[in-house]
Image (spheres, rainbow, N blue to C red):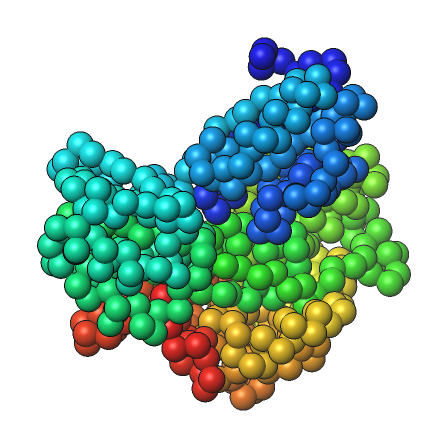
Amino acid sequence: MSSDSPTSGFVAFVGAGPGDPNLLTLRAAELLAKADVVVLDVETQSPLLRHCREDVEVAEAPGADYVRRAAQGKLVVRLCEGDPMLFSSITEEAAACTAAEVDFEIVPGVPPATAVLAYAGIPPATAVPEFRVVDAAQEQDWAAHAACRGTLVVYNGIGDAVAIGKALIAGGKPDTTPVAVSSGGTTTEQYTVVSSLGRLQADLKHAGFTEPALIVVGDAVGQRDKLSWFETKPLFGWRVLVPRTKEQSRAMSEQLVAYGAVPEEVPTISVEPPRTPQQMDRAIKGLVTGRYEWVAFTSANAVKAVREKFEEYGLDARAFAGLKVAAVGDATARALVEFGVKPDLLPSGEQSSEGLVAEWPPYDSMLDPINRVLLPRADISTDTLVAGLTELGWECDDVTAYRTVRAAPPPAPIREAIKGGGFDAVLFTSSSTVRNLVGIAGKPHNVTVIAVIGPQTAKTAEEFGLRVDVMADKPSASALAAAVAEFGAKQRQAALAAGDTPRRPSQNRRGARRRAK
């Protein structure tokens, strides 16, 4: 049928891919965005609903009467694991559409047979151009499959893996033939054990594999040492707590995902307007009428607060004409540039209040017609900057631009994971995130890696009895995430150098599952 959506209802059998929601096809995402009804094959497909409208109707297969809904004019997306045409039972469902005179479309998906191997670093058909995929849930002639000279991939065979290995050996396959068993493929739960047909029983004894999993047999498995890229990421599988506001945590979370981590955003701070707006109103008026020589921004939130006030008064970045503008760090500078303001002063060394003071010019009555500085800041800011600028001869208007208040406690499972060592790392981006996280959820477990954005945050963490493991080389969220990734990479390299299997920090707590990723 045409790729254009029909005017009447129809059913799209859509391949959901191998597990990683980012491996969805463009056609699949397009249909999900238009869907009236989505039928989930398994609960793990729920992240794909992010492509859908808020009012989409969600049903679970089997038993969903979706053909009738399509006959009523609804666009139904029936999600199928992997690829709908590979080891799938949609044939009968498609026939039901035909019987009801309902149009249908089949959208291929990325199959685990190729995707999981790619994520495991196993090229399936390079040395020998033969690639065979079989379903162990159906009766198989393993002796015939033993003759496969290339790569053999087995679906649904994890419960009989040892028996399958023995059957392949009995069929003539050498017991030294390399084997890889991989579960949770293409997700951060992916776990791969490399063995041989003769050693499968010993190597899988304590592995704890569950479906979905693939068994890969053949010499291509030997390429894994050179081509493994996914499971070797520096923070692969790490569950990382990001205690920030949702708006602030987005970029950091995306960076952590790129390092292989599973970030969990737990808001500990809510940013709200000042209780009384008059102080900010006077400051904006003074800024426009020439009361200040400098405006110093110590956070992106301060930039946002001033920008919102400008919009309230119908002003824009042109109101900064003739003013000198300082930013405490890169993130604040980016917020200013997005506003249309290029900072005149950005610390070249330490990006903090101390670093800003260290490079701030002293007041000179011959050069500076005005000796006043506007500091729009949070209600809980320290006096370091005010004291430093006063010592340099400047007068400061320290104005509350926004308030930071403690957020509501996270759900009980999150609190238990924090205190029980379920998180591998926690990233603190300010002293207030330390105080508020401990206040709403308790202290992180001692196996959890504690990472801080700078010296002041480290000091606060230590005051709460936390061991600081990682500190960013400059106070930015991006630098903090990179520092944790470097820490994870060193931990991994040290384990490998010692001949050990790399372990996540949470796996070192008492009672943790002993399986290493």
